[in-house]
Length: 266
Length: 289
Image (cartoon, rainbow over all chains, first blue to last red):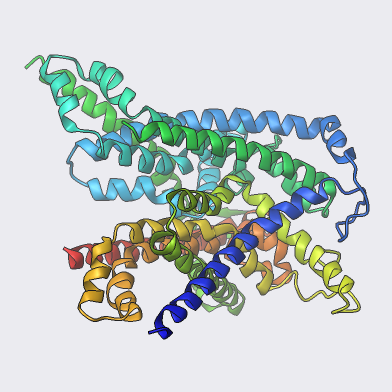
């Protein structure tokens, strides 16, 4: 009688402890990163000797870093717009049409999600070189868009499937041309998924290294700049950039949660 | 008749844009590296040929086989470790977490790191595990060790820990989705039929969640298999995985044909795993129906 509840109590306690440890595994490192960005010592040893804001001051005086941030904004904006421009039609084609080779089409368009970035980067680098295009931020944009289309397709396709078909049918029965139906019926209904996919693509592109590594010319994106700094060693300056990135990510997560909340009551 | 034409035109556009993109920016580049993989290296460039020398080198040279073996080992270990951590967590979320708010927060907490720079998440472990790192200074301050240990960083252990840390959300997401789809009354029915919790788990929950496990395994495996940034940062001499070798062939070693052949090998391995997991998912679905 008393044996069974206590054994399940032990199991539950063990599981709860495990969950707490997992959270610690995920979050203690991030707190460590933040803590060291305020350390007055150059070496990252525990305990922290004193508090300083010097590393942040240095960041804002670092022209290369600021240029890299600007480049990243440029790349991420256009890469995510391109990914949307190709991904939304692809999701609609998958949702609405039956055509020969559809399975292959789906596999190909989703392939870059699992395909390591290095293969995308290398193969595009070879193509651009073959046709005489020099590596630049623009080639990076095309590379990122290719890698991100799959992300857009999965998000938009999932939303389209929950959309009642009758809406679009009614619109076309009433004589609306397809473009009109798309702009006034389909797009407003999948709006939150489009925003969500765009936001996620932006973040992933902002953060991307493997494809950028091969396709960029002389210009650095922010992660590439940080990566080249890291190769020289660990410094609290990197921790300061990192802390700002964590802060920006947090804001974007909140925005995306608010967006998905807006999606559910519909 | 007039109404048909624009409809077909728009269908052509809807399908045409992504199709064109696939052909120009995926199939064409892949085709080019397939072609290069049969070419011959002739320093400092390469010349057209049709021979299997590059593939033969990869299959017979011990150096490349070792790298391939090490890469497979690391990515399998990462996938298994991620599964071991992600599954109990996802199970707890779906079946044990009673508060809806807590469930949402805990799920978000595990997925959120994906939004935080990948590079930073690799870098953090370099600062934690290094000889001047936090782990060492902490252990020294507690008196457990008297001098900094170099055992933590620049080896396979560091790579497995770091890659697991980075890719674990990709394991949690599909498993959580699969577990959430299991109707609660199935477990009740199983209990009514006299099965214990362990039996119910093994006979009902686990089989129904295999598509999630397969999807999670595919993602974590493929992503760690193709990584060269994190291994470079924390792997030391062991960090020379297949992607790093590809990178060297296109950089310092200047052997594009061999690098192309290696990329094709990687592409084939990834495609094989994706279609294997697709098949597993399909059989799981028909099995359930």
